[in-house]
Structure formats: structure tokens, C-alpha cells
Image (cartoon, one colour):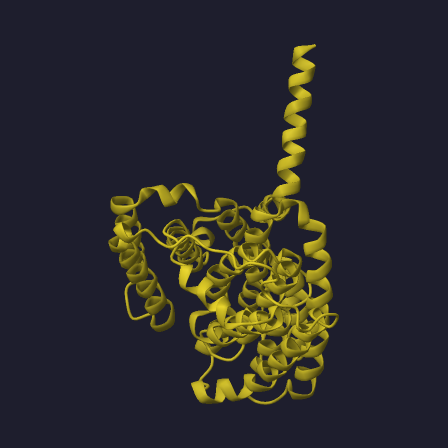
Length: 390
């Protein structure tokens, strides 16, 4: 009797885990299937995008420290400058959009999605939080279009062509500009029923200020964030050295943050990278792509990214492509659509789901509504200019 009850409890825990970590579970099964079709090799394991994985890990550690030390407090003070929720949302979405080309879409989301959650919780306006977070996700992906280092797929294509930075930016301006216009319309859509809804309806909410005695620790975390951003943007340092410095410093000064990191999010990224590299190594897949991609880069970039994400999709298609402009537009537009179209969306989902696991259905509903609208917008924008020589 007790054994049966114990088994039932284990099954309930397993079901609960699968519901809470649905993206991780799907990535796990997909990667296992890909490894059956294409057995693992040491070379493939070494070639995974470890830079992205460790960068995300370090950012998550540092930002957990920011939250622990209440370093987002100055941003709460900014809410006093905005009278309406619409104005606040414009600000948050706009900051993400304009920072993403310089600090990358992943970094902007890891930084501002938790901040947005804290702000909307603090002002008791959580009914607008989900849609704002989703627009921040779109803003990060869309804003990162502009520069060669705004996202990994841009960097892949940029480093494999002889295009100048100015020419690259010029080619991406149409999609970037349409993204900005689309976000302006989307924010208006969210607040269409009450565009002047005030941030505070009754008394102003007070937030806990940082502890004055921990000023040194806050300076420490700020220095680590600056170091990471400089490395991400310039890549002038040895990446392995930066990893060692950051991890060692945190182990010495504040090892508690290691317990706070979302390791399922990191594992999900690892599993997606493993899945895509395994699929790319299957001989018949290589043969098929070598005869079908060239001349159809735009549609292949759009389509395959919806299944394996646009970063692995770019790495998979690059060797079979001749029209780099079409591929560039296709994989960037593919950041919209399904939640796996861009791994950045998985960051947003994981952060939001961690705070509101019961909102999973609503997240996917609003995510796909807005994401599909922007996908159509980007397809219509890029289709006429896909043959513009990069």
C-alpha cells in the first residue's frame, strides 16, 4: 500500500517537473534522439558554442548578485519620472531595443526581464507584466539585428564575409527600423483601452534600499558586469581567462549566488547546441542541404530556425549558402515565430516561468500572437531586398 502511494507521489512529482521545465524536457529528448541518429564524437563536443554557454552562466551569476544586493533600486526611482504605465513600458522596451545591438540580445534580456518583473510586482500592476516582457523579448531580438555582434548569427555571417561594419549595418537598417515601428504600435495596442492608466493609483509603494554596509560588494558586482560587457562587445581578452577570473572571484567573495542560478536554462542551451550539431553531422542531411539550400537561403533560414533555432541554423546552413544577405535576413526574421526560433526567447520564458509557473499557457498565447505578427512584418520587409549583395 505504502509502495503504491510512494510510486504515485513520484509520478506526480515527475509530471510537475515536466510541466515546469517543459522546454528543458523537450530539448533533452530531442538531443537524445539526435545522438542515436548521429553518435557523439569528441570533435563535435569541443566545437559546441562554449563561449555562449559560459557567457550566459557568468551573466546569470552576476545578475543574481545584483538582485541579492538590491542593485536595481535606482531603476525603481525611475518610476517616479513616469506618470503612466504606457510611458514606463515605452521606456523599458525602448532601453532593451537600443541596448541590444551593443550588449547582445541575450545580455539585454538577462538584465532587463528580471528588472521588469521586480518593477511591475512593486507597483502592483502585474496584469500588464506578461505582455511587456514579451515585447521586451521582441525588442531584444529586433534591436540586435543592427550590428555584426548584436547576436551570434550576425557574427557568424559577418566573420565569413568581407563586408564592412557600415555596410552590414546599412543592410540591416530596414528590418531594424520596421522593428522599432512595430514595437511602437504593439505598446499602443497593449494600452489601447486605457492609454493614460497611472502607475500609482493610491499611495506610492516604498522599496528596500541597498544596505550601506555592502557598498564594496555592489562595486564588486558592477566591476564584474563591466568586465563581462567589455569582453562580449570587444572580444579583446582571452575568454578562458575571463571565465576563470569571474568564477574565482565569486567563489571567494560571494559563493552563495551559485545556488541561485537557473541551471535548467543553461542545460537547455547546451542540449539545443548538442542537438543541432548532431543533426548537422548526419551524412544524408549534409547531402540534402548541399543540393537544396543554395538559391533558397532566405526560406531555409526562416524554416529550419523554427525547429533548431536561428544560431544553430545559421551554423548549419552557412557552408551551403551563396547568398549571405538572404541567409542573414532569413535567420534574423526567424527569431520570431516559434519559441525556439531564437534561443533568446528561451531565456525570457525561463525567467518568467520561474516566477509565474502557472502562467505557462498565457505566456505561449501572447508570445505566439505577438511573435507571429512580427514574423509576418519581417518577412514582408526582407523578401524584396533578399538579393541585395552583402
